[in-house]
View 1 (tube, rainbow, N blue to C red):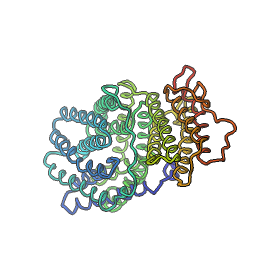
View 2 (cartoon, rainbow, N blue to C red; view 1 turned 180 degrees about the horizontal axis):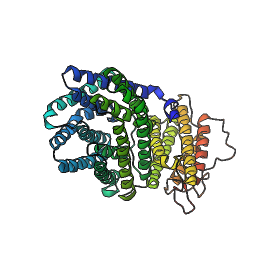
View 3 (cartoon, helix red, strand yellow; view 1 turned 90 degrees about the vertical axis):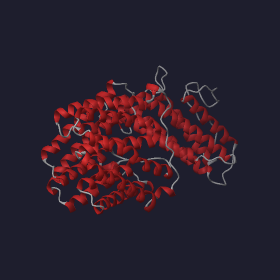
View 4 (cartoon, rainbow, N blue to C red; view 1 turned 45 degrees about the vertical axis):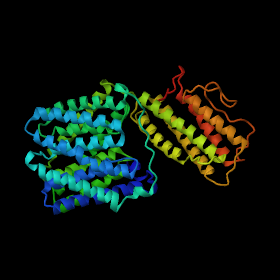
Length: 507
């Protein structure tokens, strides 16, 4: 856990900027809410709304992010109204909450914007339960949400928009499908079923804090697609919560809601949430848990019994998510991993073709966007394979093969980056051997992805690609990268194929 946070690379200090801007934006929103005369409840609503606006909006372009941010109140205000209006009607309130859960997950089919709006809508309902919102508080809460989202937008798009200086990231879309074959549809059903279980059992555990269980179920489903990913995320959520509760006994309980130390610690927690989110869900949940404890201290509700209840409700929520993904329209790790690996290999094919065209002097050929897409796809592969390489996984053979696949895919990415760097050199020249090597790499990828293609002289019937003897490896830097890429693809053939012919024995 320590290594993930303090040793993980941060190219361009992106995570540092992300976290520092969050502290600035959320702090500004809370201060402005205070200056506007809102109560402590209004300030908390505003701070959480600003946090969501800065954390959940992930569109590929700055323009898209601005549009999604402007739409957040459109999704959140009606849900907030319903949550407050149904405060004294528990049965209708619970059914409405489950409907919000299902709709919020289903909205992910429309990409990052649908995901952001779904999360904001769910969290608005959750915050209303957290603060026991009633209709008489709605005007103040409306004002806090609108003011805070506007403040977060001003900081993100005006004061500190570091994304404008970077190319838009390539965001891989999920595999296309329809009906219950679409993962988002299946997950919407799973999340609703899991949240229903968490709601019922959570109310048995506590009639006042039951929404913690529903929140735990919801967040376990965020950014996951397969059964294995969801189970691992649930484990990490419980672990982060337990560690955060332990830290809360040492930090939040002694502070006991004192304004100045609480504000400083809350800012540190916000920084930790944003800084660790990309590298460790456990660390992020530790920071989220500690932040919740500090807020309860401000509201005067914090006690050791409440912290123990938090652990119990989180466990109920994680159990609900686990039961849902195991028994309700399960999405297997095998199927998801296979799809992402195939897409990554096809991207290797496209990168090689673009680089070869660039070296051949084709005008307009640019492999750089393909490299960025490959990095995104490999990130998805790592996330999908995470359940298999987890230290607690009992399937040793699969864990070993999955690690081998990841290592070889990383080798492919490294050679692709080297090839693209060579292709970017204006003095690089075309070579007949380069064309032959590129052809063999493309044929090897086609064999691994199951496409029908006649084997080249360097490709055997099993899909393994072999470097031809007698080709000088040092004659051309591009050839060296291509030959190493051939080797990685050749070695990938074994772990990706089972004796029965399935492409993914290990995953």
